[in-house]
Amino acid sequence: MAKTIYRICLIVCLAIAIMAGLFLYDRYQQEQEREEEWLLVWTEQETPSI
Image: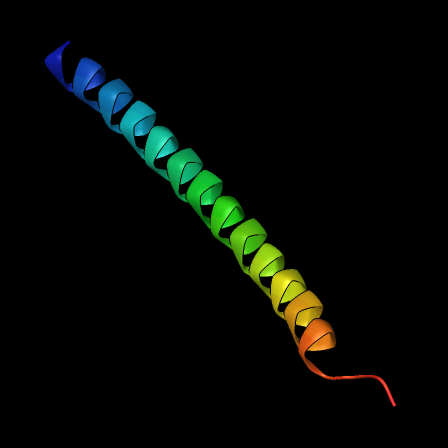
C-alpha cells in the first residue's frame, strides 16, 4: 500500500516539475524574442537613415 502511494506521489511530482520547466522555458523564450525586437527598434533609431 505504501509503495503505491509513494509511486503516485513520485509521478505527480515529476509531472509538476516537467510542466514548471516547460512553463519557465517558454517564458524565457518570449523574453528573448522581446529583447531582440527592442534591440532592432533601438538600432533603427540610432542609425540615421541616409
